[in-house]
Length: 461
Image (cartoon, rainbow, N blue to C red; front, top):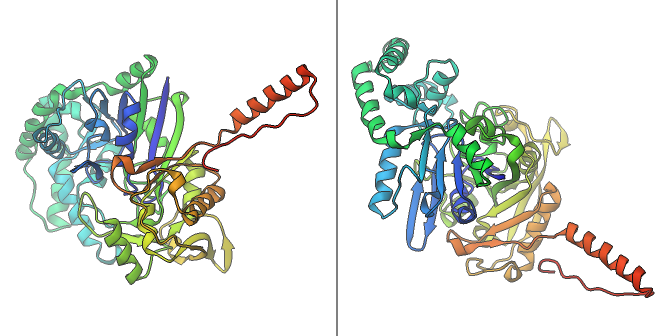
C-alpha cells in the first residue's frame, strides 16, 4: 500500500503535467486533490500537445484510474469541454477511468462574475487572478453556502442554495460593482445540464481512494499551482485559494497520511511567476524576455506571459522543509543554456541583515534583496542529452549545488517537453553500501583474510 505525492515547489507552472504523465505508467491511480480550472497542465506526446485544466494527467494512460477529489472546485462546463476535446482526439474517458467526488464544490456563473468584478475594483492592488471564479467558490465553501456536485441531483437543495447565494451576490453585483444581476433559473438550468452529462462519473471518492489503497493499489496524488501560492504558507495575499502543499493531499482526498511514501517537489531550474506579487529574483527585462521566449513561458490557462527570474534556493529550501520533500524533480534546465553565467539566490538581505529564511508574506517579501552565487554556464544545447552521463560538467555542478543547499536529492532532470527528455538520475544508495560493507566485513572475519579491496560504482561517478 503506497501513496506518493507530486507537488509544485515554486509559484506553479513547474511542469507537473508532463512529469505525472511520465510517472503514471507506474501507478494504478492518479488523484487531483485541489485547485480548479485556473490550473493548466501541459503534456507533449510525440507531435501531440495536450493541455488539461481539471482532468488528472493520468488520463493519457490506458488502464489508469483518474480521480478528482473533493478539494477541487469544479467548473462543470470546463470539465465537459475538456473531456469532449480529448474524446475527439482518440482519448477514451469512461466512468471506469474517471471518478469525480460528489462533495466537490461547484463553480457557478456568479462566481466568475464576482471574481472579475472584485479584481477590477482593486485597481493598484490586483492579485492577478485568472477570473475563473476559484476564490469566490472557495469562499462560499468555507462560509458553508457552497453548492456541491451532489446537490445538482436534488432539486430542492439546489434551488434553495442558489437562491440564498444570489440574494447576497445580486445585491453586491448591482450596488457595489455596478454589474447586472444573475438569474437563478439560468444558473440552475446550466448546472443541471452539465450535471446530467457528468452523473455517470460521480461517486464517493473518499471511500474509493481508501478502498484502492487497502487493495494494494499504487496512488499518485497530483497538486495544482505551487507551494508558494498556498493560502496559508505562500506569499499572502498574492496566493491561490487552496492548499497545494502536502496538507492539501489529506484534506482534499480523504487519504490517510500513513500511506504516504515519496513526496516529490517539481521546480524549474530557474523561477517563474504569473500575475502580481513579490518576486525577489526576477530578471531584468532583457534576460527575462530571453528566458520567456526560450522556455515558452506563457500560461497554459490564460496565455499570459510569465515573469522570469533566477532560481531562488531560499524559497526552494522552505518548500522542501515545509512539505518533507524526498525528491526534487528539476525541469527546463535546457533553457539556461542561453546564458554564459547563471545566478542562484542563496540568501536575502532583509532589514539590513543577511538571512536564509523565506518570508511567507506578500508585502514583506517585497522588501528583500537577493544575494546571489554565480555559476559558469554550459553554453551547449541540452535537448539531445539522454542520460546524466552526457550532462556537461557545469550543469552537474549546478544540480549538485541545489542538492547540497536544500538537503534533498534531485532524482529527475528534464531537458525538454518530450517523455524521453526526462532523465532519471541514478540514486546514491547509501543503505545498500552499508549492507554491502557489513557483508564484506563478515566475510573477511569468517575467512580469516587480513585485507580485501572492493571498488563500488554508484551513479555516474
